[in-house]
Image (tube, rainbow, N blue to C red; front, side, top):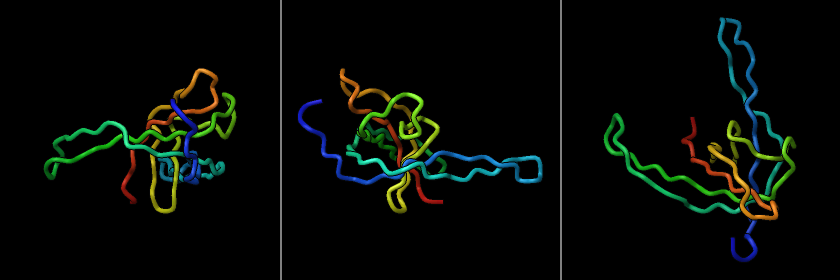
Length: 113
């Protein structure tokens, strides 16, 4: 990582909450844990064949300040970021620098339901 990151985008970190739906299954809702300032950059992309033809997919690299392991403010792969109506599903989290000051979250943008 070279230079200071541009943490200029406010992303809401959300975690899934599952509750019984009364019919033997579960319903998932999302609970906000807080706002993290981030930098978003396009990562690798690929094209794949989907049901309706070719489909593109781009992985995003979201850089945020690190938080201690176990903290509610530390992103995890089962969580997501929200920016307005945009949703970024977190796929992986790794330390971005040797000092552990920043985390890189590999994410994929989801289409709104």
